[in-house]
Each structure stands twice: as C-alpha cells, then as structure tokens.
Length: 566
Image (tube, one colour):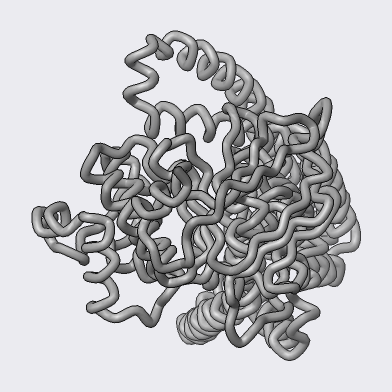
C-alpha cells in the first residue's frame, strides 16, 4: 500500500482527478438502491406509470454516468502506474547489464531472473483495476452514512460487518508475506533447473543426469506446491468468509428491517434498499481483502528489487585519453575471490612498453582468466594498481577502455542478434567494409557465405549452437572490430583446427607489425616462441615474471621472432 500511495502522491493532480471520479461514481451508485426504495414506496403504493417512467429514466441516466466515471477513472489510474511500471521493469534489467560483474556474480542466476521477473508482479498489483478497487474502499462510509439516514441500527450492523471483513482481510494479507517471500525465493532454484534442462540437453543425456535433475525438480515442486497450497487455501478461506459475511449481513439486515417494518418504524421499500446499500458498502471491502496475495507478492518483489538496485554499478564517468598507445603496468597486484583460502596471486608487478608481447602461462585454476578479466576491467584487484599509459584503470571510463582493447575471452558468448549486430557491439560505427575485413582476417568467409542470410544471419542460444571453433573465431572477429592498441587473448588457439590456428597466428603477426601490445594466455608453443616476456602463474603466491630475448622491432613476423630468439 505504501507503494500505491507513493505513486498517487507523485502525481497530485492526477490523484485529485482520480478521487473526484471515484466520488462521483460512488454517489451515482446510490441511484439504484434509491430507485428501489422509491418504486416500492411510491409506484407500487399509487400505481402511477409516469412516476415509474420518471424514476426509470433517472436511474438509467445515473447508471450511464456512473459507467462513464468509472471508465474515466480506469484511464486515469493507468496513467498513475505507467511511468513507475516502466521504471521498475527497466531498473532490474539495467542492473544486469550495468552492475559490476564481481558483485553480480555473487547473486545466483535464478535469483537474478526472479528479481527482474518480479516487475510483472508489481505491474499486476498496481494495475488500473486494482487501484480503482482500493479507491472505492473509503466510499464504503458513504453507503453506511446514507444507510444511517434511513436507520441507525441497520447502519451499525453493516458497519460492524465492514470492520470485521476489513480486519480479517488485513490480517490475512499480513500472514501471506512469509509464504509469498518463500515462493519468490524458491522460484530462483526452479528457474536454474529449467535453464539447465533446456540449455544443457547434451550434458544431461550424455552423463545420465536426468535422474538427478528429476529428483531435484521433484523436491522443488513439492516445496512450491506446499507453499502454493497454503496461499491458495488462505485465499480460498478469505473468499469464502467474505461471501458468507455478505450473505449473513443480508440476513441480519432483512431480519432486523422486517422487525422494524412489523413495528411500524420502517417500510418495506426502505428495508430492501437498506439491504442493497449494505451490499454496496461491503463490496469494495471484500474486493480489497482478496487483493492481499497480489499486494504481498508486489511488496516482496519491490523489496527484492530495492535490494538489487543497491548493487554497485560500473562507473559512467572517468578519465580517457585522446589516444591510447598500448602501455600497461601492474603494481603490487593481488586478487582473491571472497571466501577463498588464499589469493590467486599477490605482489604481481610488471611493466609492458607499447608493442610488447607477453605470454601468461599457468595450470588450470591458477588465475589466467581472472587476470584477463582484471585487465579488461571486469574485476577489481584486492590490492595494487593496473595502469594504462600511466592512468589507473579504476579511474578510467570503462566504456572508453573497452574500445581500446581487443578482447577474446576463453569461453565467448554472443547476443541473440544478427552476426553483424554482434560484430558491431564494441564499434557501432563500423561499416560493411570493416565487417568483411574482420571476417576475412579470422578465416570465416566460407562460413559466412554458407550462412542463410550472410551478416544478417541470427545468432541463437547465445551462440551455443555454433561449433566451438566457429564460435571462437567469430568472437575474435568481434574483438578485432575495436582495432585497439592492447590485445588480451585468452587461449586464442584452444579448440581450433589448423586453419583456425593459422588465422590466429597471422592476426597476431599483423598486430605486432602495427605496434600493438599483446597479452596472450596460452601454452601454444608457436605463440610462446614469439613472446618477449613470460608471466608464470604457477609460481605461488607471487607469479614469476621472465624476459625472453627481445628479437623483434614491432615489424617482424612470428617466424623472424623465433629465429632471432634462437
């Protein structure tokens, strides 16, 4: 409810119009019970047809106006939630694409999906229909007041039922908070199981993991079903209670009203009209009580979204140079993942002049990919500095820095977009000539010619449908689109055939000739031979930095480098 009031108060003019429309609609709703009273007391008593025609015409006009005001109110109510709903939908997704990866990775993928998906629950709760239902609640007092004018005793009976139903509904909504939050929390693991079953079909079948997944899914379903049964049971109980309360209230009103009629203190028309007024007074309270689960879900989703928005974002400001020359320096660098027993490496210091080729070696788990991510700015060191042409990477504008880097990750993925759109991600201004240049450089001309729509061929499943070799070469083409001064290549020839490896060697030779700095994570002997320096991450905790004989001037190819080194 706080969120609803916040939305209303953020647009006071619109909120005033909503309240006014609600007031007129509820005043006009009085026409029906008053019509019944007048027909029973005046027309039936005297039988004047013109009286009936006049009353009928009047109530029809009132009904039409009430309909019009309620429709206007719905349109106004939609205006209250349009902007907040868009913001909540955008906020969660914006965090996914702008948050610091190191922090975001601590949140399970299923939970991230649920947080973003919670925008649907928020939008449902604060829909125009629900806002209108909430606005009708205070006007129950209007019907009770009119009933009081007819008979204070009957108005007291109706007021008592209204208060009881309201309290029961409020208590029920409060009691649904914990199970609703538990449902939201369990949906994250469920999403992860579904994602695994859909995205990892081969692994599930090749290693007979179906039984394990089915067992995990069965446990998940039992938990979810138990929580849902509780929520549905509570909602069903509340719905039954409100329906029974309406019926019981009618019985009380008619019984007391009939007694008053017999005593001559009331008339039949007023008694029936009072029953209608009582039902109209209780109706918005009953609807409001049944919205408890909806508002509970929205509240939990809003709480999760607010927590999610506290995740620190990558900086949108920072330093940038007119031209980056390719210099790189690490000063006393150290990194450890949260909860690990020790650092992956520490006291790492080295300085690479522009045009230097550095090979980073190390066994699995020694931190090669982590170091690559540190250099790209996807992670931040626990200690020390990364300097690029003298600028500390923490102070550099991330967007500018990524345009200076030719980055090939070890396990590349893509957007579900066309090949051209994926290649242009880091360089949106690249023309068709540039697209063809990078495709030819990685040796994918034959692959592109065989693709159904060439550059407009869509990439699906984030590229998982592509063979590993094609995927890595396409990722290298995407990296080359920046034409950056620093190349960070994580296992560039891993999974490639001879033709693919030859393309990588040719690209690296070209980069060397053009004075580009290269940091390559590889055990490929051909690549190691062409390096000027080597960083061994097997040496723990302080990596060993070695210098190989410098045999290149930035213009010789890899073969000449090897000859000079020998």
